[in-house]
Length: 371
Ligand code: PMP
Image 1: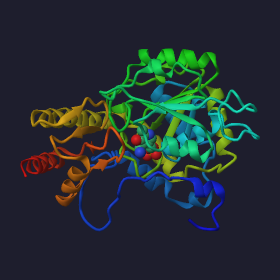
Image 2 (image 1 turned 60 degrees about the horizontal axis):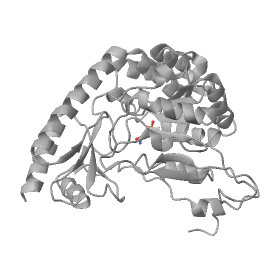
Image 3 (image 1 turned 90 degrees about the horizontal axis):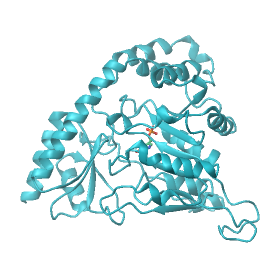
């Protein structure tokens, strides 16, 4: 605590990202990065962009990049909002569409001055940045429990809200929900003019996408990223796709904050990545094959393995607490992710590495279980 921090900063509990080690070589299975390199065309685009033009501000509207997204996902460029990683897009989304209690309200959703400010809804087990954004913007939120098997029951989201957000596939579980099951939530919240945000950070790995439905639902915003499926976590590019009304709302927030969120290198490289579909489809197929193989091998050895449509597996060691499994893997040079949260404290989230890395992971697991 510092005496210089204002009340808002004092009250924050910031998100803690997964470790990015600098000292020692680890097999990194902790932050859902892609183990394969980005397309060579991306590197060429960065080289081309790294010239005299860096003197000039980048295109604030990211026109070429929006056109590349539009081409790839069969929408209009006006339906695309790019940002500095999907984290930034999500932060703007919370600011643009979810309602904070109005001035004069003491912060109680049932207060007489604002009897009707209902909470933002998201699952109890989900991307841990959501409550952080809600707190940053001073929003109420209510977490909706996942079922015992970590599946998400969409009917629990048919209640008054100031908006709904969840990842599909969900993180850190990897479980996916079919678009047909999401549509009743869009209808219910749509009748109340509330936005439903589907965070598709991992949808490229087998989760069904809601992007084809954006023209049917004015209250549907999908959020995607190049960090995982396009091997570009280091570039920081994500984007939202939705109807123009929603995209305009995001632009209003961005342009009240920082008009140039994407630099010239990022805009050029991201557009090149989106254009090289054949290369990335090959990587995705490889990662899905690895996930299927590793999941089956772990299950055969008595691990609990949650069915995953993402580039990671959510697993529980037989009879070994999650924190201990995490530490023992780390000792063996393998980083995974553990969440110290009720219901999932015995699980680890394991990003899919190369097949050679996953073989070392499987041997390490076997040694730990035998010990
Ligand atoms: N959504 C989910 C569900 C995630 O797991 C992540 C990665 N931490 C993100 C969004 C953000 O990804 P990025 O900012 O790299 O696009």
